[in-house]
Amino acid sequence: MPDDRQNSRLSRNFHRTFKPERQYIASMLRFAASGAEGDIQAISEATGIPTGKSSGKVDPTLDYSRGMGLVTVDSSKKGAIRRPHLTMFGRAVLLDDPFLKLGISQWIAHFNLCSPVTGADVWYQAFCSGGHSLGMTFSRRQLESLLSVVYSVQSRNLIGPLIGMYEDEAAFRICGVLAETDGVVQRKIAPVSEGYSRAYGAWLLQAMQDHFPGREQVSLSDLDAMTGCCRIPGWETETFNQVLRSIQNKGLIAVDRHMDPWLLRPTADTQAVWKGIYNDLI
Image (cartoon, rainbow, N blue to C red; front, side, top):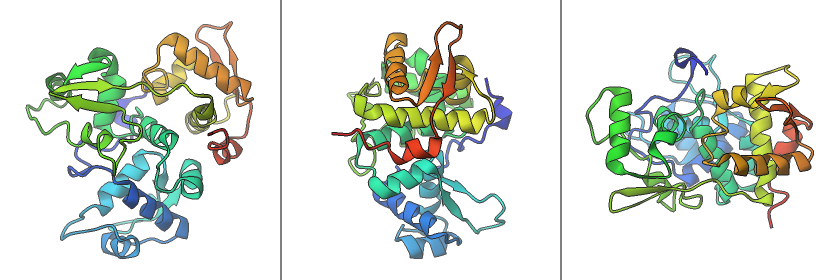
C-alpha cells in the first residue's frame, strides 16, 4: 500500500463545501489549454468562475479538476500564481466532452477522485479505504461514523458535498454513483459496457505509466494498492475479470492469469488510447 505520508490527496476541506460544477470545470479546462496562468482573480476573470474576497469557487474548481485527473498544476509556481496543464484525459474530455455530459467521462473522473495517491481524501475514505466496510447500501450515519473515526472529529459536516454532487444535475448526477433516500445511501457500481472498456483501459494504462514507469508488468495487487482499481468501481471479482477481458480483447492490456496475483502488461500506447476513449460509444 502507498505510504499515506507520501500521498498528495486533496485535504478534507479542499472543496470549501462547494460541489464540482461541470460548467466551471469546462472553463478551467479551456484555461489550462490556453497555456495561461494567474492568481485567483485573474483566473476568475478569464474563466467566469465566480470568486469572492477570498477564493470563491476558483480554487475548489481547480482542485476538483486536479483530483479528477483532468489537469496538473505547475508546482514550480510560487505564491498565488497557478498554472494548470491538461492531462491526456483532460485533453480528451476538452475535445470530445467538455461539459462532462457523458457517463464515462464522469466515471473516470470519479475513479481518479477516489485515488489512494492523488484523489480527494474524503472520497478515498468512502469509496476505497472504507468502501468494503460500508458496502453498497449504508446510512448517512454510518458514513459520518466512519469519517469521524478517520479524522477523530465528531461532526455532521465531514461528508460535505460527497453525496450531493452525485445527485445534482449540474455536477455528477449522470453517473449517479450515490443516491440518498430518507438517510439511506445507495451506491452504484461502475457500468460494465463494451463502450466503456477503452476508457477503463486508458485509466489502467495511465496508472501503470504514472506509478510503475519502465516496468514491463505490474501485479494486480500492486496496481490496486496505488489506484484502488479493484475497489473503487464496486465490481465483484468475476465482474472485474469480465472488464479486464474486454480491455484485453481491444489489445490494450495483456493479462497473465496463471500468476497469483495476476500480472498486467501494457500492449498499447497510453496517449493513443486516451484519444479514442469515446470511439466505441453508440
